[in-house]
Amino acid sequence: MAKTTLPPIWWPLMDAPTIRPERCPICGRSYPLNSHHIVKRSAGELFDTYGRKRKKPEITLCGFGNNLRDADGRYYCHGLAHHEMLHFRWVPTYEAKGSTYPKIDGGHLEYLLTDEPTKYDAALTMDGWRRLRTERPDEWAC
Image (cartoon, rainbow, N blue to C red; front, side, top):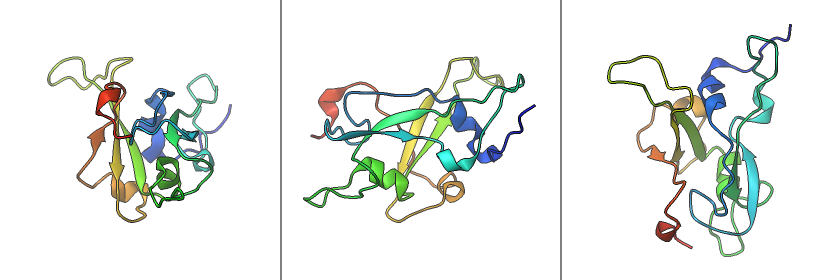
């Protein structure tokens, strides 16, 4: 049977869905867009109880490659993620008040932007997490 090599700190994020919006859900840019692994590919692998490798969730962000800024000096969200300045966490939705059992499909992604590169374990202890926008494109800054 395959052995899980993904550290437990990343396991909750493995429950997040893959998100492929037409605009960057952080800043609202429509171009250029790039797919980003929410859980780093280099972090290891997670296997279910049947020995099947779990697919890592992805999100579409603005930018290309690991470029941090565009020609005008504005940040690309994909670059921010690769420079450890944009972090994601999965927040499960619970069935009832006081329940410790998450719904099978319940939850949402939150993100945190930091001014400087920050390791994920430190980011998880910080304030300022915001729910990921998946709708309301009229509120996005273009």
